[in-house]
Length: 500
Image 1: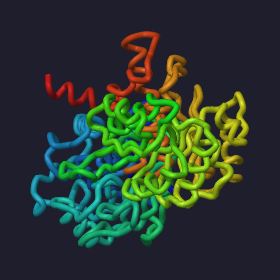
Image 2: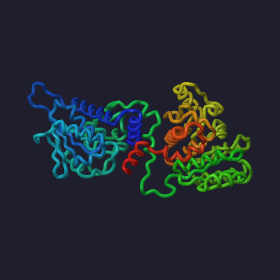
Image 3: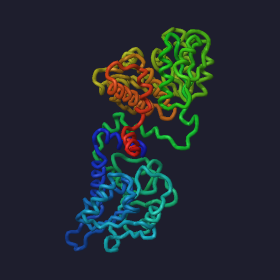
Image 4: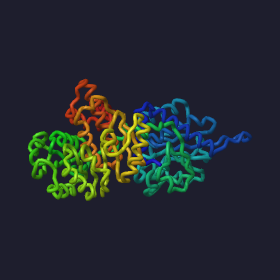
């Protein structure tokens, strides 16, 4: 089962792995054609050729319909494009529209909803209608001319095959607004969509060649989760509290700055008053909420708990040290706090001994994982098994991001891996940047998504720095690059081209 948003991310990750949109559309269209053949037999003794009417939109769903027409030469096929060809929304769909028109297939351009006619090339009743108007990425009420086309499709006696999802039906919920296509059959791609379980139609799931790696390996598709509405307000993207510092000053400063660079609207730092000025001097945008003393002690617990209650995510651990009293505060906090907590550095040692109330994201390297009681292995697939087993011993609310040459992100049920990053990132402080980035992302994403995107962006930032400057990376180098690393390079190229 896969949601529409996750499917879009997997498509993009597949492209990053070298599987082009054209390849996927070709496979999708072929799958549609194969389903058509299974539904409409050609009678060798009859002189009549079955008629298939393809009603296509201007996106990739329509593109699948264009491809299907090329695979159905043994049928009488008509293709109706809803809208002007110059408004086809993707280059891949446009390329396939040009292929069917220049190859002499029967095509009609519908410029006015009143001109829609669901029929074969000679106006005959079709034996099957292919609904290729709108796919999984479109929600809400159908607009014209799709709304009129859907009504006409529903008013015919011919069976209907929808591509990926019936037009007008929400792929995630199965709900529809006003009119939607009443499909008899659906051919959906790669995996079942949740909303298809609620509709009365036969569903075929077609393998179109998306590799498993596109789902498992973190990639640019995962960054699609970070799109921001134009009508956004302060606070919409979260407030992060960093609890850290005492023996170390740089760690909480790096974490807090990374949280800002990764998109949090406000970041506050709860730290000993002895180092408050040093952290504030690192970045004017940070809000410092200090407590008395030189390290975190039980007398500061109420102060930290009160602050955390008003934040979306708390990052606990950077620079705290391993003092026994400090770790006792960490344990008390985790037992009582009901929100999301990113646990890093020395605070990780406490996690196995407490039963936390909230959701915990732990970010250990392999040495810290071993200190927590977990096991590791040289082979990453064996590491995945051992990490999942360790999580089951802890608590179902835990997500682990185990750092390494290949990062493993798991909550025991879902596992992702990340391959960005380089040996230069073994320098101190890069883990603090990662913890801050994950904290910011956890304000707007669920823990497994936040840890995956954080690992991908942090590693990519390191790759960008090393590519530009060579060896000698500093953790502070990652901060300015993080916003770039959180953008899909394809989108950045498109924006640059449009500004030329």
